[in-house]
Image 1: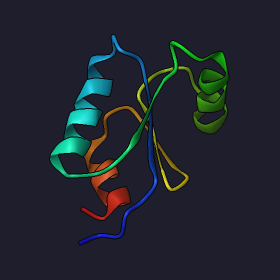
Image 2 (image 1 turned 90 degrees about the horizontal axis):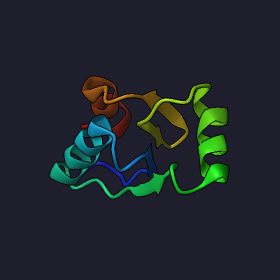
Image 3 (image 1 turned 135 degrees about the vertical axis):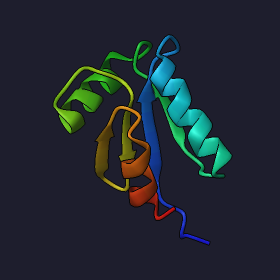
Length: 80
């Protein structure tokens, strides 16, 4: 079993790829914090500062930033 990593997903309710990311994490029993950037200007700003762009989803895995639903990068970052 891989060690638990801190995973944060910056997303919006209307983003299909955000939902894919969250489904993928749930399927793999990965706990994550889901931040709805459409509800928080501060969190949206935080996401842009981390990723350098406005698009969602942005996934932060222990400080490694992955933009979009890149399954291979996510698996690698999580050690799956």
